[in-house]
Length: 136
Image 1 (tube, one colour):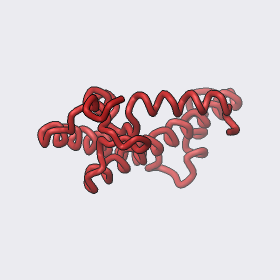
Image 2 (tube, rainbow, N blue to C red):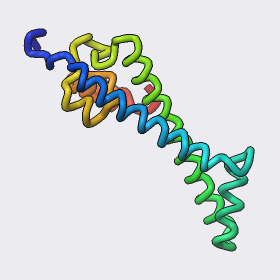
Image 3 (cartoon, helix red, strand yellow):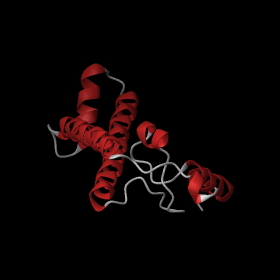
Image 4 (cartoon, rainbow, N blue to C red):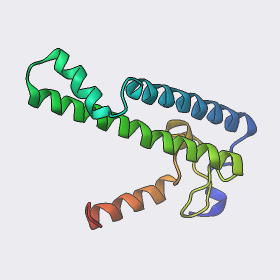
């Protein structure tokens, strides 16, 4: 790809819109995680207690509690990505591919505001991960 073919740099308005979307998602994720963890120190016990109120099947309740923990973990991982994107926004590196340095296309950033790679570099990374498997 020729550098002149790269997507144009984000305008201040586009950057502001994406910043607002990231901050809104950050607030949603923080509220969601806080709500899930609010009543107990150990989220496993909270999930298990709540599920046992709904069922007398311990295996089902335990599986449901594990799912609650997985959801909180997913939310925390997404929150980390959002906060990293906001940090990139603050230091001026937001929108640049971490691999090739070219601008990430605007459409990709609007679809996936926490993107760190352009489409081509992301595809290469995913292909490498598929070849190396989950342990590599």
